[in-house]
Amino acid sequence: MNLFGRKSAEPTPASRAAPVIVVGNEKGGCGKSTTAMHLIVGLMDLGHRVASIDLDIRQASLSRYVANRQAYANALGRDVGMPVHYSGVEVTGEDDPGGETVRATERLQFLIDGARVNHDVLVIDTPGSDSPLSRVAHGAANLLVTPVNDSFVDLDVLGHIDARKKQVLGPSHYSEMVLEKRLNQSQDNSAPMEWFVVRNRIGTLDSHNARDVDWALSKLASAIKFRVLPGFSERVIFRELFLVGLTILDLKEASGGKPLSASHLAAREEVRGLVSAIVERVTVPTS
Image (cartoon, rainbow, N blue to C red; front, side, top):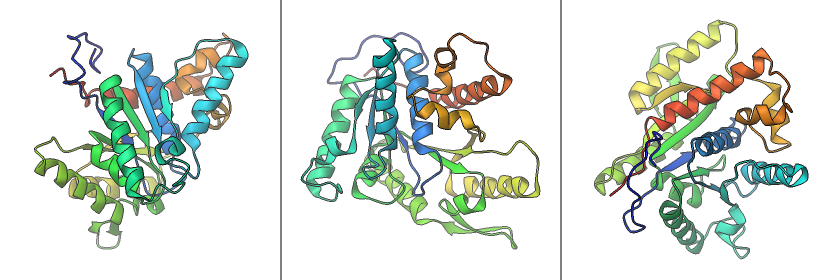
């Protein structure tokens, strides 16, 4: 089955090449792990076999999210979809806790290659800093999802803006790395990764700052070649669900059958919209 939900001939292991979705941003606190987990659950809801890798060895937020989900399922005896998950320590080994050695990057590449054979899609969460493992992940990406908070502080991770002159001065170090990986993919005769920037914690009220962020993102998107998508509004429910390993897409499970509030329904539609936009751009090759 491909990511459009249509059945297709089962590829042989030798020909299979599942897509790699990397959730990346060299800044913490932008919602990478929350975005990654909602993508994982959204893809599983579509019937896809999902593998996930958490490369944020220090914070390990995605790994804790998955562990909380498994604990919830075990405690209540309920069947909730689970990815095949690999923590950062499983990638680096206990001999290299920082993931700085060539051996760690080789181990990660081996894991990525294996996951692409045995699953329908691979989702990788990366740390909020530059690292050798993060660069390997970005180099393997078919699609990059970069969550940013709706502020100029977060936009600086994408590029440098002169607000007075209304000009883009140049890409950030992170964007330069992404552009380098895209160029390498093109030189290897591979399709260069697509890049989505996802606006998280969007305010509900129109403001001068929101209009300025709209303008800046439009300029950066044109200069650096990414597509902007709406992400998740600021909602307490996202933080609450982390504790039990559930997502907005599991709300029926989390509510115990109670009617969902208008806010919860709106949040679920935000997530479904993001998953749908990404599903439209990624397919599983059959040859």
